[in-house]
Image (cartoon, rainbow, N blue to C red):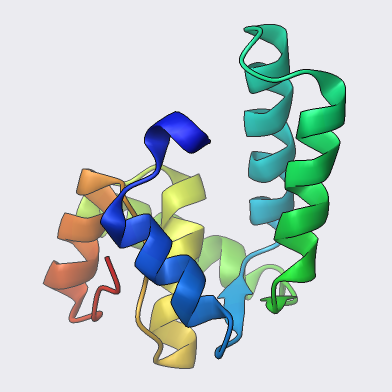
Length: 122
């Protein structure tokens, strides 16, 4: 959202113009939920929400496939080891499995990523 933009988030968007982001399937639900909440709270009308969604899907974002039950078990292990929710553990799992840096503004997830040896983009 515009009022949550920072130099870091703008730099990340600039970087995404030259790189592919890899996300767990959960990301799509989280994006939809954030946009619905923004609309319900009157932060953005429906048209603006639709434009934001179109912008996000114009970026080079690839969704990782889920491998059940392997990935689910890994989420639980990461959640327990690093004090994360299973949702946040899914992002950490993708970074660890693919040996990629992680972009997050979530302090708990960032701390867990550092402990797990994952490079942070933000």
